[in-house]
Image (cartoon, rainbow, N blue to C red; front, side):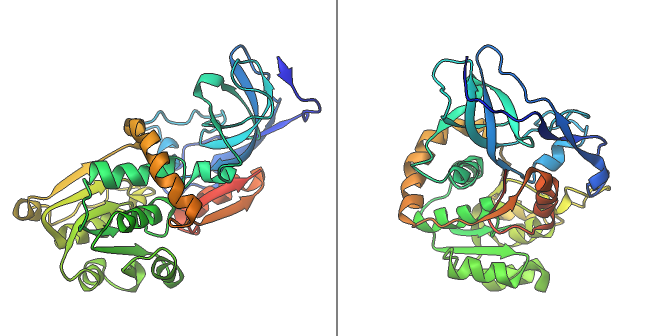
Amino acid sequence: MTDSPALPAVNREWHLVTRPVGWPKPEDFALVEAEVPTPGDGQVLVRNLYVSVDPYMRGRMSAAKSYAAPYELGKPMLGGAVGEVVASNAEGIAVGDHVLHFLGWREYAAVDAKSAVKVDPDAAPLSTYLGVLGMTGLTAYVGLLRTASFKEGDSVFVSGAAGAVGSQVGQIAKLKGASRVIGSAGSDEKVKLLLDEYGFDAAFNYKNGPVSEQLRAAAPDGVDVYFDNVGGDHLEAAIGSLNLNGRIAICGAISVYNNTEPAPGPKNLARLIQTRGRIEGFLVGDHYDLQPQFVEEVGPWVRTGELKYRETVVEGIENNLEAFLGVLRGDNTGKMIVKL
């Protein structure tokens, strides 16, 4: 095994100690000191440099059956992370390499080499492999192009448009020839960002009035594609503005993640009969076959600055939980990243 000296005595890691009901509370979690793990056969020890916090993690805190296994109580939580290899017990990955993996929420992780992806810090900043060039970027790409079958000339509406996924959806649609891109966000500052920096044609603050009315004003000719990150009244509004043969890609529903009672569904689903509309949910994990195409197409846009991105960076593993709660509150602009 090859390794670097002077590893710390303890490894801080976040555990889920009780399953949250409604909004997660700090007492549902614990920052625990544990031993730095020793990599086994075929493993590498990674010092995490950046970790990701994402809305989907709220679902994994519940014991309810879902597409991903729930977090185990009393054990480290999981999530995207990128870091430097400080010890290697595997061929093909050396000390000093940088890798992307899914053992976040901790400072050090013993990672199976076969599930680690080498990344190049010279090609792009390491944090981008958790966002614009990572899972969130691929989510935007897959949902817009494959699930929603976007085509040149479509009018596109994106909810949660200032977030990591939504901001890329709108920009990719523009780069690929959308006739009009509309976004919703939760503050006037984020609306300004969508218009001035990300190049959206129209945007509105959903807190300033009924979403359906604001969407009709922003898209008087209707929408062909709706990329849903929010659910609730946004989904109902999009169905109301959907054009003939319109498509809706369901990525998330952050507006209902912390509800303790079932949220009412859209009251206008029958309109899909008139519009011959289609609603389809998707998970990015089912579409990793598009990863090479995604990097080949989007990578140059990022390098040239044609596709812009923002990151909200929180410093320190001790602030990992607050960063996650901030995502649920909508505090972040772009991808929320924790720098360790």
